[in-house]
Image (cartoon, each protein chain N blue to C red):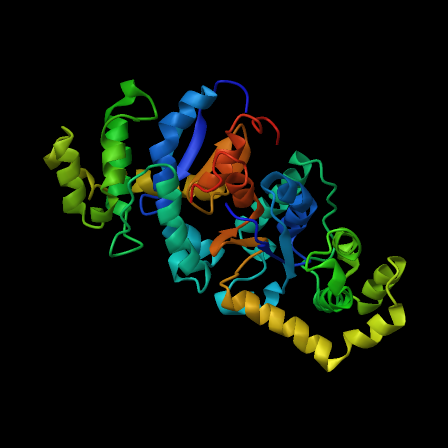
Length: 202
Length: 202
């Protein structure tokens, strides 16, 4: 890990490991001295390509995952409440993210402070567009404009292109980092390569 | 990670990550001061339960895996030659392992030195029982007895029971560690929990 360019940080709002990675993102940026470019995507279309069911629906692996979500969060002191309905639909959250992001070009590609972390932290309510709008409003976003944007063909297309770009980049899970062309899947893998002793060792 | 009991180390002879873990096993034992109990198993029957194809056959994920096998080995200075035929059949290697292991009860459950590492390092030849016998012979094992054992119903049953035990323990991938009842999938996860700072943090 060298240079000062942004690291692509792909994640799905519904993903517990994506959530853990997002919660630790600022710490990571500080540690390695490079910004993350937040690139939320949807796992649904990706799992259609890979032929994978949602993680927790896989026999044996699903039970492990439920346990690992909780202990992984606990290990890092991150509050994690597994949603009753899981996985959740995150299309509205995705569109809202890119729409809000596009409204604030002056703040760069990574709105670390503000809407995104809040959206993530309350992601168990994201299945309904109305909930996403309420969350955004609480952050000062124009709720009426956002509600209209969520049904706007251009906004839908914008979000869709992001998912297609993730697929074209080889992304198949959440979180997924691309550092100077080198891909890393999973928050635990990232923890290892970013831990200093291994940085640049790939 | 506390106490002095053995840690169950499940792996499949065909698994690149299982191979990396096996190569690093002695280092792990020295670092944490606990022995590993080597428990080879078969991923074929497990993948039937989980509904997963072999890793490298999964779109997107397979390409990532091929790249990650090589870089992961390189990062640890481990020689890794991806076999031309992959995944490979490892039933003969599995039966040979437990048969040889049963012949040497005085050496305990973890034959770290000797037959096993050699079998692993040359695992790309394991698809044929004859190759397994040749490897074992080079290590001083009675080849004639081993060749007979590989077709022995009791030996077959012994190996089968081990695979069933792995499934009953929740094992769905390779490597897979169980430490005092706590399961850890993957060599990279193990590297994290065994790195000292995280030990016992689960």
